[in-house]
Length: 312
Ligand code: CP
Ligand code: NVA
Image (tube, rainbow, N blue to C red; front, side, top):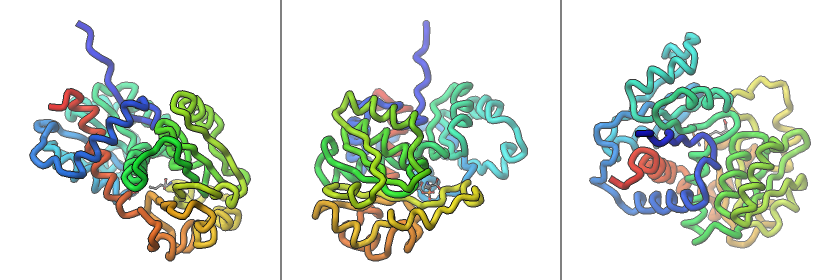
């Protein structure tokens, strides 16, 4: 008897458009109430951090416990990973103890290497290239505020080459959103990921545009998103990550160019006064706290999808 290949969630296009809709439906159900539903009973899930985290750690640890499972938080820096045990050997050992692995790490090739030898599902809890768990929560938040996803226009402003920009392109295209990325010169998204997002968009009716002028990018959009200009690991990369980014700050003037009922998202942590102003993040258009909460519901849906696909 052959067994089905292990399903991983390493980037946003690892789920089909239909699977994405089903995941968001489950996330909404969990948000309403699924107390007593314990599909992870008897299962342990390792959550490995090679970078800092507040929301991702909390949402995985709480969510796994709510589903009846045992979360095992592994600090990469104090585990043998921090003493250069290879990611492949670490993965082989993790597979003998746990039923799934979520990991926050650096290059995507590192999570690909871990997944390549894993017997259990691997979830991307953020890499340099992608943050697909965050985008599940973002899509849930947009849909609950707007009632739909397909056909809406989402504008991402800031570092177009970071994990959030790439995941919003891929995940947004998967959901049928029109995604605009507006970044200063030299900070455009990776062309390979733009092509992948456009390819997925051909199935869903989504478009992906790179629009350097932030005003043009925001005109008539329904959702504005930003993120730090200095992602984890980029602190000393020698690039000016403030000056060229100033015109891309989400402030009252820029927000005024969007549709009147536009919402603002930020994965957090926010750097107030840099990529977003206090009056916007604390204002009526901001959905950032719901967005943070939805990490819990969306990741529970993802865990149930990967570990209990028959719904038990
Ligand atoms: N948005 C997000 O991933 O937050 P943390 O870095 O706190 O996990
Ligand atoms: N782009 C940011 C996201 C943090 C959740 C980073 O990688 O640091």
